[in-house]
View 1 (cartoon, rainbow, N blue to C red):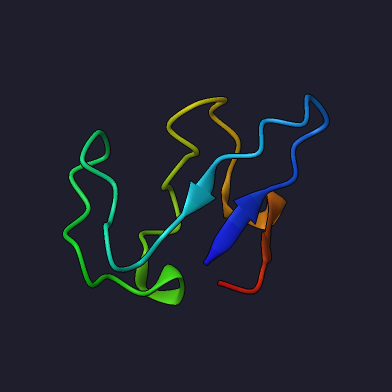
View 2: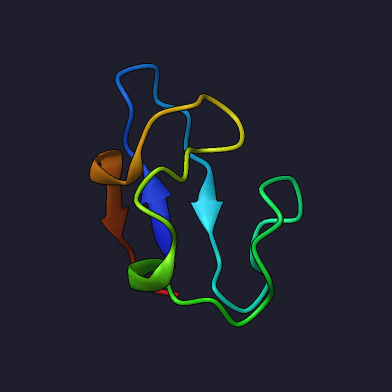
Length: 55
């Protein structure tokens, strides 16, 4: 799982098993396979603001 580390402390967690319904990302999509222009569905920052966390 990957957690958003934006300066606003969003805290959104991208779970590959669930995907991102808002962003039309299918369940099972690895974080590394997300499109480069994918944004956090809560705060809108890019992938570079995400950090891998233990599940």
